[in-house]
Image (cartoon, rainbow, N blue to C red; front, side, top):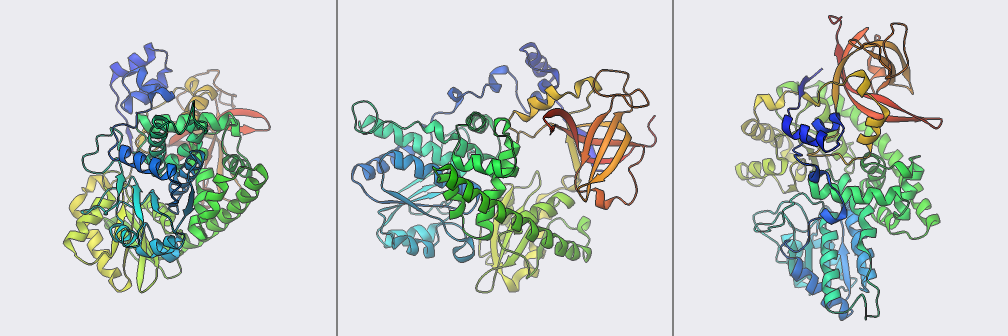
Length: 588
């Protein structure tokens, strides 16, 4: 079991939150995440940052308002992940509501690669748009924007990825991470940037009298798009600062209230999830993967059409197709993990600072997930490669805390000019391409770059927790409070640790352990049913470990766990979800 590190928190901040009425456990959780006052927990829509400070927004709004008034054709160029799909849907729905002539084009990742490439620009030109609007891409598309200019199309970039050394020659760029942008939140997802762009456009059209009172067109309620914004923000695993938590919470409220897009409702239903209790988990691990499956295996247009569907019957049909693709993706991923395990047997992962793997059988659309699995298992930055076109390998990487992966690749590129043909991304994830003949060279360069950037301590696997809980604190009320909040990158879901007696255990569903645990130091409390020792016991699960355990768990364990709500036959109870465990035989 990795080292357990208990998060520290300022006692005065936790005390102030308790004084304001926050549950004591949640108070210390919030304080450990930088929350100091009750006002910082206000995630009402009024707390959303205004769009005005974002660089480029006034110009973008003016250009688009002119285009709408003059009936100029617009074409959104999307991206093939959930963030890009939701950003495209937000743009399509808002612009249609504003009266724009708008359509979309999403590149197929296997034919055109990432971003606004010259190739996809030439495809877009066949539709004769006056303006191309990029969503979740474009900041690195110097050549693509130049090609669009040559062909007589202007490009409006909306993106959130880090800019490179040179900006594209676009008519307008909106990106909170571009130099000089004073917008306080630098962590918007691509869909968040597009939502802000539509807010600014609505303001411009309102000023011109094109929408609202006295005009022929009713002013659209853009808050109706927040379910899409929440989905893309969670799925892209961006840092959940206060502004992003507002966006997510407001979107979740619409979903729980049954006021979401038919496509999101259908995707939750096909997965058997309760719409009225939808959580950030459902967006990130239920809806998001099904949307992403389209971009990974076929064409993201299927996912976008599901999000745009107005008819429940059509949405259900498309959600079913996405669910089928996601099942296929899981099978491909499982096979790839087996191959990766064989590769890893030939090296010593603990001696490497970064892991770069390639196999000719791997699916280009699934390598990002594979890299994430390798990263999780070995706590090493990992990049998985698949065969691309024209003698290239396409790579997708995932990082560990303390390493900005895109910046690491930038440093590698400076030390080894020409080794990377293309690269981009952000702190936690990045994509790149190299020549197939350079793979071994890249492996060595990647490992050497990480040795210069990381310390041995950063490679030590650890589990951060929010301390221990008394048995009387392990309640369904606390679990439900946790489930109702938006957690994610930069604002991690609470995890606790403690010592337990294993009262019962059995393997279920071909590889998971269902447990009954009793706190070893518990006195008789009314926290749960009693076992023969007189201690309170709690249901627990240890996923994907039953097939790895040749023997039963020992009688006493030390475990890191999360609290979740278990629903069975209409009854809801608290359940401990074990992230890891170790023997605690020496404990009383």
